[in-house]
Image (cartoon, rainbow over all chains, first blue to last red; front, side, top):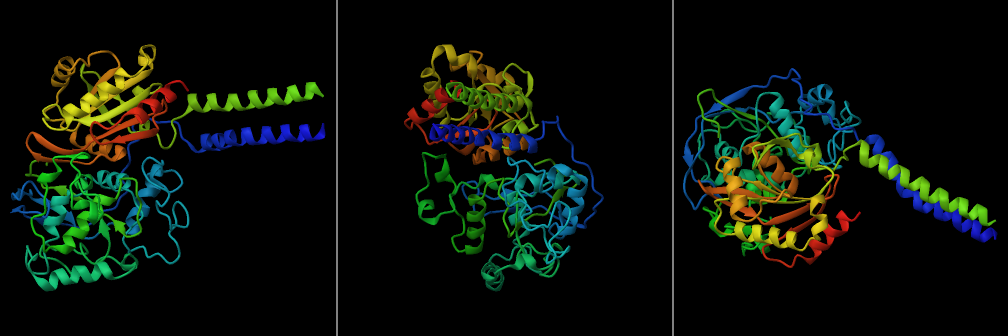
Length: 282
Length: 192
């Protein structure tokens, strides 16, 4: 009889342990508040003007030139200090508060707590381990937005003194050398070169979120990219690369094609852009 | 002794049941798409939020009505799934088609599309968003899309199933694939 007794106790434990999880989960889920508007957090960062042009991106509409409108771009990527100011004001983007739908478990992974950086993190290093949703919300708070892939690639074609340096071998080599360098995300912002437009750190520091990164119809896995998956992607065959030599850009597009919006990655940060007053909304 | 055993069974049943119902009623879980606060127009020109779909099992797909290639097949896949549902369960289901071309797909156009494709019953919902809400929503579904011409998009062919709380349960990728797994998953969820 004692054995039977024991068995029941075990059953009770086992069958209810699942519910305990539910219970704790219930404690951390916050009832949905309708449209929690993020509030401004008093960070002003310098921006520079980039004159719009036509250019042929690596992946575009059938090798046609596309038009990038005039825009203002942040000179530097968003720093740890900037982002800290943002989460101090906007609790729902704190590490302990953020909803799983909007950021995976790596979100601000290395921070000591909600409002404290780790001791070895510099305030002036770029913020990383942020999801696309978080980056989006940050920019919106400042009345800005993330750049589109086309806009980002357009400004990033520039080296120190040319708007389009894609054919300059030394420039491509610089980018590829960076891709091989580990842990550049620990460096501080503004320490790489200042490009033609006055923008720093597009190459050499961290990768950056773009608003429409999900428009990259690649799997990011070279063997399956060779045959475009016509069943999974309608019209994928029309999106072929325009410049097969631009290896650095290939890597960037492949990376974008491989992330999901809730990913928080150690070497992926962001910066914001803004339309100029006279540009049409994209 | 028997009494004690009975007592334990009672505790097991009672104790476990209570908590689950509470969770269902009080909150939206962290993974739920009902956390999105974007607003959408339906084919009947009603403004809704995604959480208005709460309480039903939702089957979703992203399409655009001017599409000539994959969307008719995607729409056919949706109708095929719908036709395999028990008729008495349809009122507990939402079949939602979200337009990736919000500029062209107005509520009127969506309504006409619904009628033309015999998708006019109350369990069909067509949604028009804005460029940014569609982008956000596509990210939630991990759907990729790109406008390649004014009326033409490339996009992933994914049908997603959400439970009554808005949590993603299952995704079917590809066109005209065997939908048995998807159908089973929906029926299993709706009976839960």
